[in-house]
Image 1 (cartoon, rainbow, N blue to C red):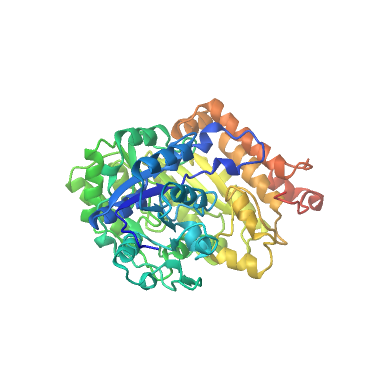
Image 2 (image 1 turned 135 degrees about the vertical axis):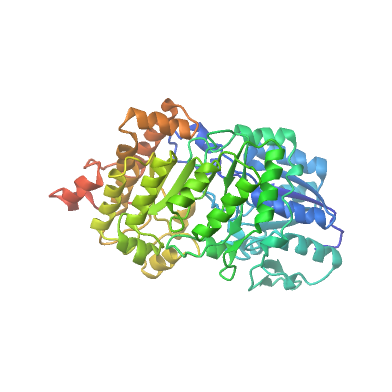
Length: 531
């Protein structure tokens, strides 16, 4: 490895949705299979590589509706890269299925047998060294790879020890596998400005054409938008969250210097972007950070449509903070409400908020004219049936919320939830996680709830709470860029998915009705979720 000097590098971004993975023959709405977010982290890797003197090009597989690998092959034949590096759009925005990059790297080797192949992202982090061991790639890097990818390629050129680079997995000359015990450490203040100049006008047009239709991150005000990250990591350690695992337990919450953030915002606006989404793991840890951000926007006379795409942390939100954000252009608030039970929030999820505070945030947001998305998680070990019912009732009691999401707790690698279900021997087939769309199917049960019951909440209570009013249906469809007819197709797809997993079920279509049914046990048998 590394005998020929590496001068050209192709960065490949895997798509958010692996369309070929859906083999259940259910009529999935077409637009749900084609969605994009900005290549936030690949563009930073690209900027670092450019700074090191490499010739860099870029291809996002998700920008093609069909024939993505044919387009990739053309790109490889034209560019003939010395190295191919796969980088996820955003490390902690987990895709439906982890990629080992095998097909991409095989193509690279066919075009250039000496091509160096490097995997990064969720698979490289969740399965440290496995892709190297399996022969899918030459090297993998876990965690944040902004500088580590460039350090690896530079070390190969210099003939120095790659094992000294944090996060790297590699084969030793004797065939043994080396995996670094460390994660790369990244100072956000040292990051270069993302190299968006590498994206051609033709490629930009594809991003404008394929935002996340039908999803809560859809840019309602303008499809000429960009995702920007202002911080990384999180001070919270929620039960089901894999952020600290993916970024590294020792990578504490870090914020970019405010001047850097403003430079990125101004650069995006100067390029013609008309809306910005902030794609942070935790946008702010206190009210002061929010007000500092909004005050700087005002000082620079910057006002544009924006929102926080991964969810706004609830604890820092005051009426003053919400008003300041709305004044600078924030039009949608995505609220990780999680539960309608204070005990579950405190003891199970360990989310630093309360039911009362969440209620207040909803009321303040409605008075300020913000669009409101509420996110709930059901089916966590330690939840009682009555507490799950409290969550459903909280959603029912807050019609001010424009759209309520019920996610089924999914045990992701590195989470406390995974540890609990593994130690409790609840998850009998861990590979199920890669065979479903995460957070839509129950994978385990407890004495308090079954997979079936969580499916009923996810399918039927979700539909009843969100779409009984024609006015709510029309507003939600407008918010996420689809027609009401397309929304009806989404609703039908949800029902079809439920009956795919539970074809024999003919009981009540509401969790409340099941709880109150005199023959509850007849309807709560544990049925298989994945055939």
